[in-house]
Length: 364
Ligand code: G1P
Image 1 (tube, helix red, strand yellow):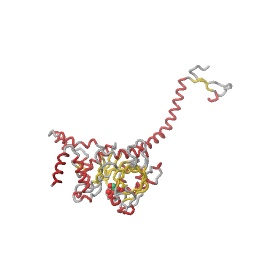
Image 2 (tube, rainbow, N blue to C red):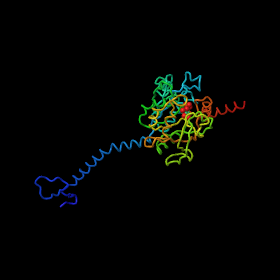
Image 3 (cartoon, rainbow, N blue to C red):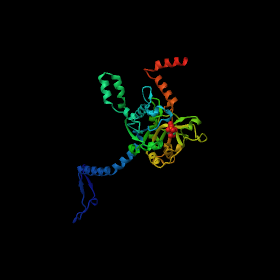
Image 4 (tube, rainbow, N blue to C red):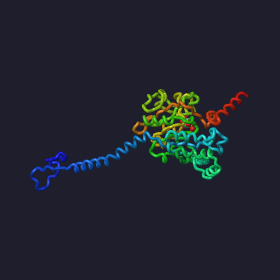
């Protein structure tokens, strides 16, 4: 008889040995049962683990955004003559180059890796985010602690890398240069002319939207029809706010159509795309097949526009988040001055005196 710790299984479940006539009852000890079970489990796990890992990877890919691409190969023609020899990304806003605000914003949103798409003459951008041992040693020796800390601030930011865009063929072409670096993963794109106020939550909220809906997410700004002609203009439908997304009703849109720099009569709504994007990897595939568009350039807009009709399972879907924070166009002389004055007035060291100065100036 089987004891309580042994189980009897019918002989038909084991092979009949030659010469065996009567049914045999096989006694299996508890240890053998445990071994049998764990072996089965091991076979199941080793068979299905790669499948589960792939599925988990797919889910992860939908949600984790660790790469950012910052196109910085532009000539800065709106800001000549200084951009003849100084990259516009290196022009200071208060006491640091505007590009630092961009890299800081990406870092604050959890981005770990920033890729600059640059061109000849823009090395100073990379130098800024690199060590300078001679300077650091001199400052340390001189006991200039605050200055030393300021030159080491770059270490808190995401790691930076760069790739060249040898030919200025457009924003879509610039972003396509990042494909090899980013791989089959989503990435944020930050256009450095669009400076968001420090502490901006926009990118974080766009990442939440992608985690909830998947697809590609762009930032939208309310503009006049005349202004819209200088941007990508969108047709939109308001979407309800999904759980886990910190947006107000009316701030989340499904984009149903988009045109780069339309003539006035083709402006689609008051919502224009500004320089913050979260691209599904499917956009990189689309960028490989676009034709030159507005201005004869390869347009990023024409790449992500394809996401409107692409099925969700293939990475499709295009969403917009309406900006409710301050944004400056630092590629424009007036926008650049506005950014400087606004942020300097809020600076704890410079603000109060600058306010006095501006007041006296305006009274003159
Ligand atoms: C680029 C994009 C455009 C977008 C704009 C936002 O245009 O092509 O779709 O609306 O940035 O700033 P650019 O300003 O480079 O002409």
